[in-house]
Length: 280
Image 1 (tube, rainbow, N blue to C red):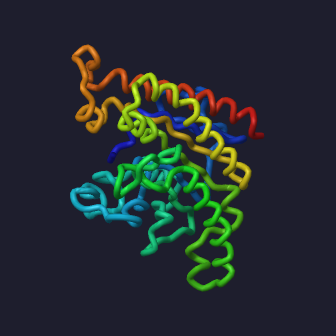
Image 2 (cartoon, rainbow, N blue to C red):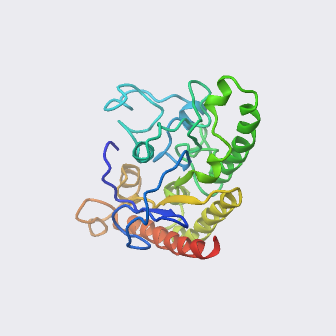
Image 3 (cartoon, rainbow, N blue to C red):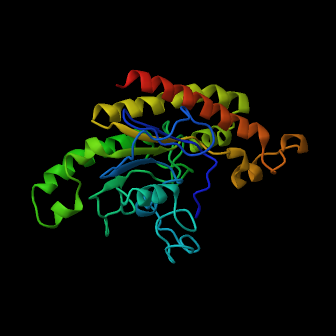
């Protein structure tokens, strides 16, 4: 993912400005002012994991990281992720994974994302199953711990003072979310039909929305929320589920599965519109 070309929309919710990438947007307006953030706190799955799952289980190996870092860097990518580009665009360093105890610097934020994470509780977890135990509710709890304990450690001074965020950063930070794709995959691999997975989407989005509300209650005010991507184009879908020629689109992707992703994005957009009304 060594490019800023995205097929996913990003929604930045703030009282002061709205940042958007191309594709569907909630409000087609330019940013009202230049936004500056002292820190970023990220939640999500492999699309934004900068080393969480690798630190918890098995470190990434080549060819991961070969095009930019020239070595494995905890990312399930050949180079940088979208979250890396976001950090760079605001003049911030790449985010350290919350779970990584070696060489981490949390001065300008932390990354709670882990590959294979879901919004809803996983039905099977690594290493026995295919999903991360660090689903969104757990990432939220980790953030609570981080917010409280980082300030206790900061009072010790010394090196800790320079490796943890200032207290005021939490209210001024950008909170980013990129998660949901694995919830759909979990349904498909759990032998749910496309109709059944579609029916589960409102509950998935509701859980997502509740986590955003909870983090808002902790003082967060600026949010960047990504859509899920075209799951019907992923190799693990194309390789594991039988498809007829009529179900394939011109790009070689599975149309029925992409329609589920589109429905998820539609419900997510509805939820964000409501959040803008509910959260002053």
